[in-house]
Length: 89
Image 1 (cartoon, rainbow, N blue to C red):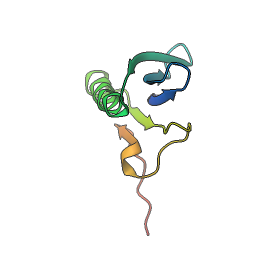
Image 2 (image 1 turned 135 degrees about the horizontal axis):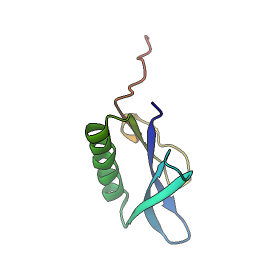
Image 3 (image 1 turned 45 degrees about the horizontal axis):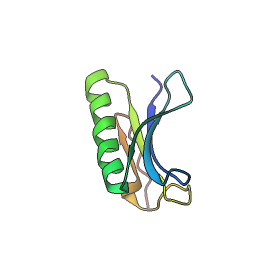
């Protein structure tokens, strides 16, 4: 089963954070917009977890920086039902 990918991205033009989803019929569907990154991230985690729990479809959350890159560190990506194998060392 293909995983659904949620993304938190900055929209420079409208100056808001978007919670979008990839993997549905359209390539990217914008769900909601938020004034703060923290709000977008919190809702993204909730949406991804709820989708996994309700439908059993693996989901992933990717949190981007304002420059358009996936942030560094463990809090910028989360997976539900499709955890990657851990690397040794």
